[in-house]
Amino acid sequence: MLLSLFFRVLRLMITSILCSLPIYLEYVGTIPDNVILFLSFVAFMAATGIDACRFSSAFWKIQDYYLGQLLPLVIYIIMGFLTCLLFQPVVFNRIFLPLRFAGGFGMRTIESIVYVAITIIIIVTILRFFGARLGRSTHNMFVRENEDI
Image (cartoon, rainbow, N blue to C red):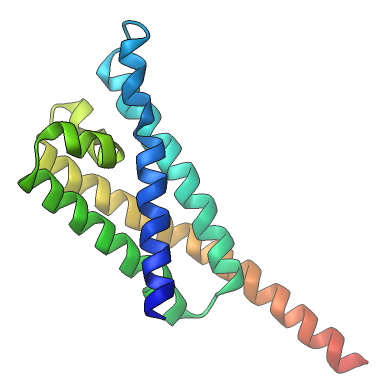
């Protein structure tokens, strides 16, 4: 289980780094910071949301949610918070840019991390509910089909 947790956190980190790449768009032309933050956040939420649905449809029990989705998200958020406190903003922006989305509305980075983290957890929890429902109904359908045979 610890190995699975490690790979889930690693997946979140890779997704976050890939979704932080829009920061390099400012080298191409004059793109406002708000647009870059928006692109980064939307890409991260899309990737994380799809992953949450797929994971929940395969592992739909409540302990799978806590250990497979919520705990990795909390570890990711804590790592982002610590990176913000301990490193220069350049490092934080290259790794955790999606957590700065609320900064486009004038918030400081620490406040942005808190609000975006709450938003991510709520959205992942909602998508987890739908994925788990789909997975449970699919499982029940296969169980009924096997009982009929």
